[in-house]
Image 1 (cartoon, rainbow, N blue to C red):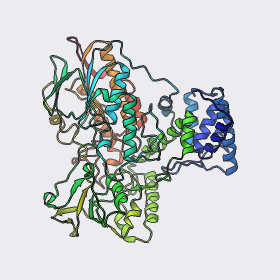
Image 2: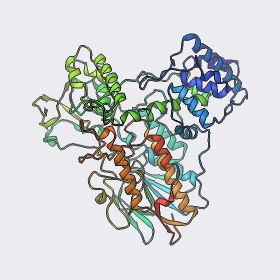
Image 3: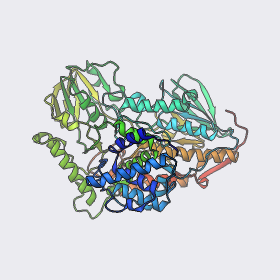
Length: 635
């Protein structure tokens, strides 16, 4: 790191430090000075409550001022050329630093992942010596863009096929009011591409702009063929190549196919009687009509999941009346910074002091990633399994219940309808972005019924409630279990991957490779969605690193095909299912989109992120059937 400063910069920095997240600043101060006093009382922050940023750190004002003054001196010395006392902290030091910053003990196995994410240790080089491999990437969303960036860095020839007219995947497609992330912006970012975010939880336009900027910075659009949708992908074992056909009939061939089609990309429209009979606008949130004016309209929202919870607060003040049909309530958590902008002083601090940004992101990663994972394990001796799965989960239930009751105080009708009767985290946890405030409005009605039918201008609930409406919004989620649909993917045997998986039972080793499908690699594959929190971009980086590691081996050793061994996938799937059998998402008290109709959890990762990071950090080529290249490849 290098920097320069003058007296004016010092004044600016002093003002910025007044807005600093104090726990992050403590870690920066220790790393710059090496003085262990900053990791001792009275300079140890308190533990963050839930998902709060804990900006004040629990410090008394005079203690906070001492920390800021010392940080100002240390940062000024650094900007004038004094190197950090700990430029690359040891694993033991990192664990102590992150534990101090989050106010609780972080297990030692997290050190290596933290060190690599923060850039304190260099990742293994993934550059091929002289590649003759060719790769087709299907999709230019978060994972497809990442694959293209890393393939180019490795020196591997590739092309990206994207059905839309620009990058971004779901962030390009989903334009409904209120759309945004429920992961902190600084965490929902590629590790190598920080951004000066305007809000703590980015809305759709800024998230898409971020992805667009990353694409521009890495010249991705030159390697992406837009408006090109894939119809079939067929493997030829004799030629050790894939033939990919587009919906327009164009045929391309490559040695390797990487799918980056995601799990939240095909709208799920339930077979409600009368859907086609409705006379007004009726549409899925992912297909929001351009230019739609809801002013004064009577609107029905079907569903109360993540998209509904974003749409309602965004349109409640515009519509004449909104009626929300709720099949089952959701657990909702609060965030002290959800509505808060990231002020200029904080952005200045992150840009001027990269260590501050790194430590702020590291704290977010702990608080939003694996911190909650132990509380999702089922305690077989727990005395009240209907409401919670263990003592910590029960404490979460009490906290979330109090928040709901306070937010809906004076509305016992809404409290009764909104309070879930299943354990917290049993479904995807949602952040309150004004949902409870919107429910309290005079022009909003919550109907605790699923939808039985739709008429020309009505929606009828399963218990008989019928309302007249002008517009119907289907906030009914996505076909999360029908991976790769509608692409027909056929492997070595000629069998379609959908035939092997069935309609909703996808499985893959590490969620990435499947027997009988050589040289095929999945991103966002089965069992890799994060149910316990965190940023999917972290998982995408794990998967792409693993894939490029395999491709590097193929290129350096003239390998024509690699195919996951059946026994390797079987063992992984067994361990995956056994882990889920001990976790909350198999709880019988609720339905969720993580598991299929047979009760098997198809979508969600059962492991901690740090475990998956370790599993995918380098490829074990003993897991594959390997064939030497039979002929020279051509792009």
